[in-house]
Image 1 (cartoon, one colour):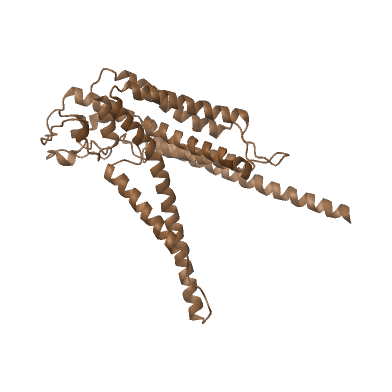
Image 2 (image 1 turned 180 degrees about the horizontal axis):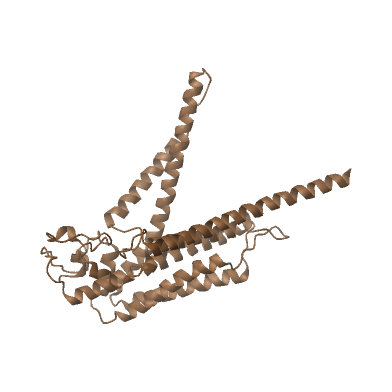
Length: 348
């Protein structure tokens, strides 16, 4: 069986005389596969959504306290925008999934294009004969690849959103609300819960519509696991970088005091930095081996004008939220100082 999975490895095929395109990772010599791909899932739009989520988190964690000392964040513009994106992505995935009900091997095509480095021998019998990419590709392969590439955009968005809400919910019920005096409004919680339920239901219908339950469940597990891996990868990389920087500063300081003939215990914490670096290296290796792209492969560059515009929108929103939180905190400190001065004046 010669499938779309064979064409997604151009380095193994005959490409002499073909021109490599600037955009597109899986099909650099065949831009026709990206005909249905949308810039709505390009890197600029995706990073803009990440910045909106960070804006929501900052707004909720540093919201002004009420008379009882609780922070009660509710529905805001950045929250609505952050929820609208996965809602649209889930709807988009479901509609495209229903459109390809008659396409054979659709589950396998989506799975192998999302994980090009995975060994697929256990999923079927493949023709490993070297392909000549200079020859016309069968229309049914092109159609299947176009839909699979298109579905590679909304799926990561949906699963990333579910991961964020899942972790936030676990933190909330684990005691975050009591520790930080944090209690979102009823409408805020209902809106997030309703969006989560809609995305979950839509993805469930989508996976059952793929036909092959085994491959569909493998795709589901892989997509659900990827946000956890990327989140821990970011955490460990930041930990290793910060820990290494602190250790270097401490080492320079220890050398200085040793030179001044002062007692100094020397730098500490290097073991934690090394452990974090090892974990980060393992996760980078895992992502590299599977060939999983950090952003959907939709043949869109972040240098495109629409992607730059979306990214600037996210940056501006985050900067506004941070500035607003700082100003609100400063105003709160000024009010507290004023009340303290009034109390002292009254005592006098």
